[in-house]
Image (cartoon, rainbow, N blue to C red; front, side, top):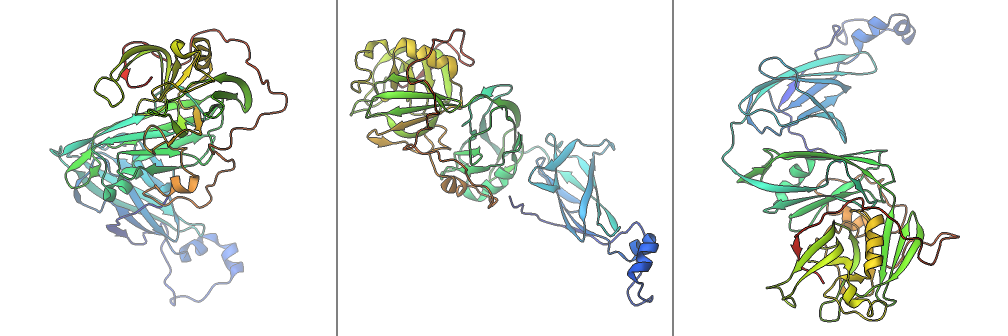
Length: 444
């Protein structure tokens, strides 16, 4: 990703060895240079540095980064110290080694000193210094951010990293906000952020599903980040979790079935009942957002609602209230006709089995219903092609990022040779993730 820099201090060539000015001495042959490396270093151009924030800058946001521009060399070290001389912990940006990011927000109304060193292969080196003072505590309203990525969890292979904003981030501020959102993956699987058009949500994914066993570390470093003319970011959050076995669900409205794939192999096919014509289910690529052993659907005051019902083994797919859940009242309709208020109804046994193997972040593809899933109604990062998703980034996206597999509602994962076509054994044990109790939400 490209990094916009505002360079305020130009550090001239401060070499570790004196420079010999051109024209003052006779040329030296390459043979002589090899025989006398010190003489060659004297003739080497020292790097030049440009640093931001500028020297003696005032009212610098506590979210600031140290940006460096280097000519004739590369950065070899960045050190930041506070007013007491203590070193501030930080590290280079994953996408720009010349930009240093503090591990936590800087202190308000504090003066910091920056020392940057740069060198080149010819032996020239430069040290540049500057200092700046951060802003006082701000009275500006804070934009509330919500990071939908928890600590020490096991997520599905389609899990996007999602951050929501209230109020939405204006378009002119999205690049600066996006620069403060960091994702590291081990093993490395680079991706990009993509904004909803209204700026209420930004999501990160790679071109392909995450590999099983991947560790994803996220930091939403928004404390004090200027957002628009009158707001700043609210806080700094971090989380690290792993990716588990790939599980995907494909719901076919024509057949009234749900096919569950585990590790690319068909594990079970189950009858379902989807939304009736007046309250149809959405077609598209969704992701399991929440899991509840028990929850309450309360649709009083909503169109086509007016009921309150307790359901078991519920998995949220959309903000609008579409779930997969146990529906003992519709077992005779499952596989035959659609009778729900938009949810995917399963028998109690099948819903319980699915809760035992599914995870937040698993992909759920629904095909052939009357309406299409609206982007932003849930974690819809996989409901677009990669090109369309990448077009939503406020920063340049590396051109070499491209998917190697198709994630399309019309193309379910291929069945592997020898995969079972009938239901397998019923698993035992509690679900990996889940909660019980009185969460309310529409559904049915």
